[in-house]
Structure formats: C-alpha cells, structure tokens
Length: 417
Image (cartoon, rainbow, N blue to C red; front, side, top):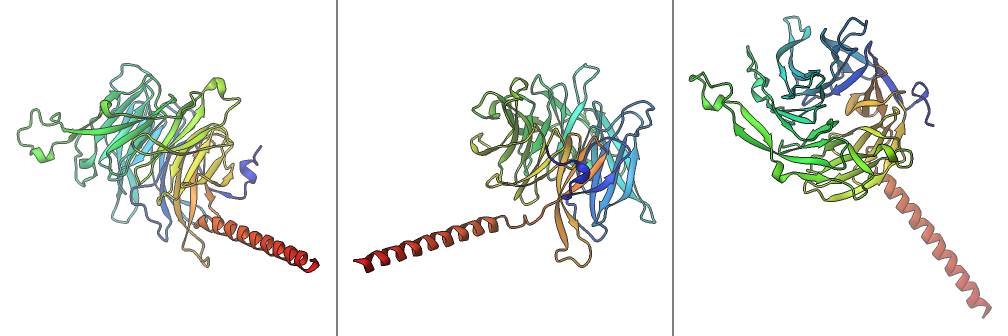
C-alpha cells in the first residue's frame, strides 16, 4: 500500500479547513503574483447545527502556505460544487440551487464575497435532487450544472460578469440526459460542446446549441434584443459516445484539452472492480480513441489537465494523486496526500521561495473530505522529453559498445587466420 498522507514528502499541506472540502477552482485568468496564486475552495457539513460550517473560502497560495482573503458562510447546506466565471465571479451549488457570488473590495482593499442571484437547476420534482458538479466555459459565458437526477442544466452567464446592480436573473435550461447521476462535466475551450460522465459505459459528447430566449422580456418592451439572454441546449442528434471496447468499464470522470481532445477516466463496473483497474483514455471530438493506458490504480474519482495540456492529474478513491504526460500517458509521479477520496484537482503555478532558480513552480492541488488542501510538487517534469533523450543516448552508447566489441572479436579471428 502507498505511504500515508502524513509521511508523503512529495506533497505539502497548504490549508486545513474546519469542514470537508468538496470543490476547488482557480478563478478565470488567475495569475501567480508576489502575494500568491488565487484559489477558491468550498464544502461543509450540511444543513443543521452540527458545528461544521458550510463555507466558500478564497485564498492566496504562496511558497509557504495559504492566506485567506475572503470567505462566505452559508447556513442552508454544504456547497457541493463550484465553478469560476471570471476573476471576481463564482458559481456555487447547494442542493439543487446554484448561486452566483461576486468578489468585491472596499475602499481599504478588504475583499468579501456577496451572493447576487440564485435559482434551481432542476425541473425534477424529486425532493432529494442535488447538483453534483458545475462546469464553465473558458469565457465564463456558459455555466453547466450536472444533477443527481441525470439532468444537464445550461445557463447564459455572460451578462452576470458585467459590473452593476442588480444582476440579470439566472435561468437554467434543464435537459434529461441519462437516468443515472452525472458525476463529471467538462466544456471545451470554445464552448462548442460539453462532455458528461455518469457511470454508464460511454461518456457523452454533446454539441451545444444556441437560440435566443425571451423569458426575461415577455413583459418588457424596452429591453433591446441585443441584451436578450441566450438559451443554451444540446443537440442530441449529433451526440458522440466516448467508450472503450471492453464492456466491463464505465465512464467516471472527464476533462477537455485545448486541442479539442477529451480525456475520460474509466472505472470497472462494480461486479468487476476486484479484478480490474482503471483506464485513462484520450478521444478526439469525433469519438475516435487516440490512446489509452491501463492504470495500476484504484478507482479514479477526478481528472484535470495542466494549463498547457502537457500533464494530466488524476485522483482516486483512496486519496492517491498521479501525474501523467498527456501525449504518451506515461506515469511521471504518484503519491498519497489524502487518506480519503480526492474530490477535486487543479494544476497551479505557485510562487517559489526567494532565492530559488524558478519564479514559479508547477504543483497539483488536491482537496478531499479529509479537510485538507494539499499541493503535490512536480519534480523535474518541465521537460519530460529529456528523459526520452537520455534513454536514447543510453541505447546508442550500448549499441556502440556492442559494435566495438563485435569488431574486436572479428579482428582477433582475422589475426588467428
């Protein structure tokens, strides 16, 4: 078994919350500064007075730890999911409702989070429906909520990024995608398609369709058509299944790469879980499998890609995290920073201590219900091709030694003749 989290030297504790952490996100266009890298985490103990708060916390992560800059406590329930729409706008989910929060600063520069608009993301009548995960396009103009009911809800959030009060109301278009709970969603860079993984055999790639919506303007003739929010939907007729040929696997988590490829983490079906291990696979947006790798890991729970798509981060149900090289799917690093399953992952460029060679250092941030935000330091992974070059040089040297030895033996044979 892998080493425990407390003794794993390759990961460091950035922050210990007083609540289980379920969500982690980096604000859009987050840049590492001298103060650190801006990160948001969220979670909680649920509704009721259990002594465990439900919190969203923003912090700057630096070389030596985290500094809290703003937070918001909610009494109604635990925050189950979160997504960043802009540097100052966050979306967070409690039960079936999604709330938009805006980060504001007073005259002295003290920041605080303020809820702006909120609405339900489901059309289901089930009382226990809840948002499992949130996703946002790179522009922050499209917000997607996945639900335990198998619904996928899409909203136009472009106008919510603008300054000014009040905000336009938030409206979701909820669509029934599957009969199973959706575990993971991802949008491509351009906001052209959304990928969902719901523990079915195939992950679904669904093209996003756009049409005008007049919901806000039915009784308002003064609103210009240009200000009318868009209605986002998905094109079921053009859906693409991302699946393995092995029917013993189901899709568990997903993320999108900037080149249009999709990464899907597959886990064995429950009846095969004792004999099989997880698989990570990369597909193009036509559903054609590009490459895959059988992993000697426990069931995957999360996947993410670095900003330059060079690395993949994986988390599993036993608290391990792994770093793979995206192009080859070669494993570069692994450790166990958490004793409980990894709930969310993100790569980050974190400032390094003064006096070091590099200004920033790539780290894989991970959170878990163990209440810890930890950073796994990526050692020597900036140029993985150097490893391949070193191996090639070793092979060439070995070949040269072999050829020289062969030539010497032939010379000895000629001398005897």
